[in-house]
Length: 171
Length: 141
Image 1 (cartoon, helix red, strand yellow):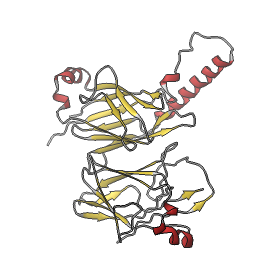
Image 2: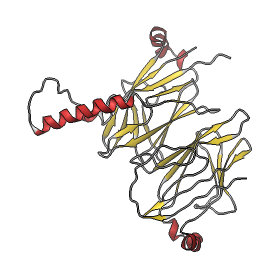
Image 3: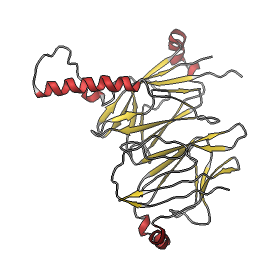
Image 4: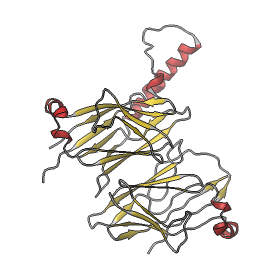
């Protein structure tokens, strides 16, 4: 039996929250705020490097469930604990961590018709449709890239982490 | 048959910082009150919880069990931190929250006073097969 594989890749490029991410490349000032931004940028770069060392999460052995824990740093910004989740159609991913958080798919593009998910009892479950890769809206992208990419955000207390999500199929 | 123990101990640490779960130890996800226990299935269809020896929890913390589509978390001997003793999965997830005032619960007061802990026996049931690893929950005052 040939299984199709979906890969959810969570690249934690903007750990510390993209809400605070700013382009400081053209700044040369020495104000406290600018220095803080510079430090934050350095920190984000460092964390980004760290995120590349995060594990990839697959569905648990013998099950169709992958798990993503969402931690919160001391400043209250969301942190992910995996850099990618690899799933097959029909499998699901369970996000858990803070009491209240949201998953919001951007650009009106999501694996399902639902764009926004709110946690219930600290958990959000996103189920990947079994026929996702046969759907017209994703078929062409997959044929071109061998992957389907979704942009989404994890929102906690008004703060946001929005790593890209890439879904790709391996035959 | 193994015994799962919910161990509520009075300690003097006030940190929620967490370490990743291992076979022997598990704490809440950093900055949160949530512990995730994953349940894998071996080739024989037997449940394999990610924490098999020790789980540290505090009152008020949440445990998220997930893995198989359908499973049951059950407390044995009619002794449960909650009003009911069985929790069936919904969408492959069971979430339970240790009561904040469990040490003030009349059912457990004597035990907690005597042992500075409260022990529960629980198990994971999947497809009629059970696994009941020890679970330890600690409370830090």
